[in-house]
Structures are given as C-alpha cells and as structure tokens.
Length: 81
Length: 276
Image (tube, rainbow over all chains, first blue to last red; front, side, top):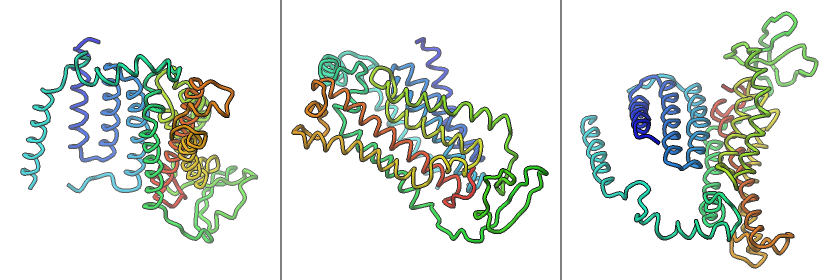
C-alpha cells in the first residue's frame, strides 16, 4: 500500500483521538471514538492483520459505539469539566 | 493540577515515541518476532491441524488456553454489568403508555403488564417514544436475517478466512441489538430473554472449557483436540481442526449472549422496561 494513504489515515486517527477527548458533547465523543476505531481498523488491514481489523471493525466501531450511545442516553450528554 | 497532568502525559508520550526507535522495522525478517515461533507455526500448522488460516489455528489451538480466558473475560463483563446495573422492582401496578391502533390515541394506564396484546388493538409504547418509522422497522426486519447468516458464515468459515468466534458472535449479538434499536427493547426481549442471554453467556464458556476437559478425560492434555479422535470418526489432525470449530462456536455463543446482556442492562438502566 502507498505510504500517502497510510499517512492520511494516521492523521485521521490522531484527529479523531484528539477530538474524542476534547469535545464536550459526550454523544459526539462516542461517534468520534467509533470513527477512531474504524480508522484503526483500516490501518490494521493495511498492515496485513486482517483478523485484528475484523475484530476492531465489529467490536470497536460497531458494538462499543452502541454501548457508549446507550450509556449517554441513560446518563447525561454534557460533561461537567 | 491540569498543567502538571499535561506535563506528565506529554513526557510519557515523548518517552514512548523515543522507545519506538528501538523497535525492529515493520516486516523485518531479522526481528525476534519473525524468527523463533512464527517459522514453526507457518511450517507446521497445515501438518498439525489442517487449518489454512494460521491465525485461527494459533488462536484456538496452540494458544487455546489464552482464548479460553479471553472468553471468560467477556463472560465476566456481562456478569459485572448485570450486578452493577440491574434493578429489580415489583411489576404489579406499573404505569405505562398504550396506543390504540385504530384511532392513534395514547393512553396512560396502570398495570400495563397484565393486558393481553395479542388482539393487536393496543400497542405498548415507551415514555420517550419516537414514532416507529415504517421504513426503519421494515428495512431492519429484512436486514437482520442476512446479518445473522453472515455471522454464522464468519464463525464457520474462520478456518479458511479472517473471522471466527469473537467476530461472528459480536455480529450475531449486534443483529439482536439492531432489532432492539429499530423496534424496542421489549421486542428483542421476546426473542432472547434476559435469562436466555445470561444462560447463553455461561453455556459458551462451558462449551469451551468442557471441550478442554473432554480432551483431558480422553487421555490428552487440556485443550489438546487431537484426543477427540478417540470418540470421533476422524484422524487426530482432522480432530484438531474439528475441535477448533467446536470452541469457536462456544466463543461465538458466549460473546453473543454477553453483548445482548450488556446492551439490555445499559440501555434500560437495569430496569428492562424501556430501551434506547
């Protein structure tokens, strides 16, 4: 795989990670975390670890995002700090 | 305090980045990871287990003990969510909303659990109710069987392609979660009840550990699936491949159960009345 694509995805990983910890809206943080997981999944796939990429896509980007959204729905959407 | 935290995090990050300089290059043939065990796995997996996907063979056979405890971790996650969140309350005079289907009028009455809904005259609806969209419910109802079929394929085809118990189980569980999101939590609970999810969780771990114990009883080591050839009409190599399939099914069942269990507990805040 070309290194340009690698670099773009890595940049997205960093942006999504920084966004997920700085954003005040917790629902947005959950979605950004899902995006982060999906970018990591792409990175795993590029590096040839297809099984890990599959797990990351189903668990990280799929189910854990749903769990986060459910938890936000039952608690509060705004952080205090 | 925040500044001190920032400095510590920054320093740790710099140290980690500095330490990555000592890593071997990606795909370096001389690196330790590529030299000792990997070669043995690559050369012997086909001979030992007749499984083309080496990752699956390492996960469920050579490193089967690790995977058994990973499954136990998933099981514990489900149990912990249950113990932390579940609230038991009396269901006698529970207030709830009903919709009269013919007129679309919404009623709030006591004792909604006792009414029979089989006639289709009334429907239970959630307090934070958004009208169930016909397009969403129909599309999800059409999609869910295919998702489940794909999940079964992922579990069963883990020997030949990426996939296996964990991924397949998550996909199976998320198909039920999709049902709970697109309809409501009660609909998904009629498919797999709370007890059912907890039971599936435990049964999956039991299948995994039971396969290991069965190998022990048949004279092999714990999780040495070759010993299964004594009770199956298979040679030891095929028996190892078959044993991998059995434990993958166990993992899939456990993961599916715990995903549904965690979702129902989290989304209804442990009350099992109204979900997301």
